[in-house]
Image (cartoon, rainbow, N blue to C red; front, top):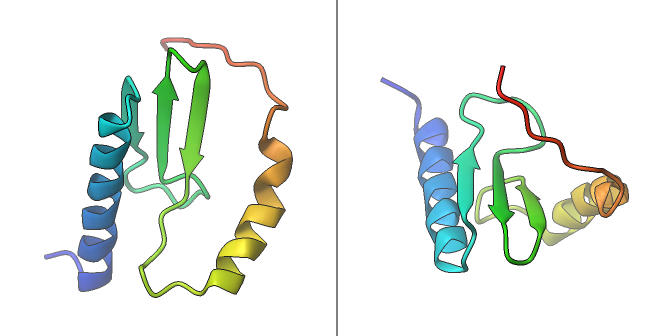
Length: 86
């Protein structure tokens, strides 16, 4: 049986996915089992937007969140998107 932290994290990720779908994102996917900074990715075709999300517990400190955003803000607007099936 998975540990409580894993189950709570997975539950939150599914909640975020549901919220994104309600906001009009066409494709929403968890990166299950990943140990990367990206837990969820979503594509909004109409807005031409790809959203990368790192999920954290509700009690995560605002200061820690600001640090993570600052470390990754350089990703915004810097990449071309290419789709492949392999």
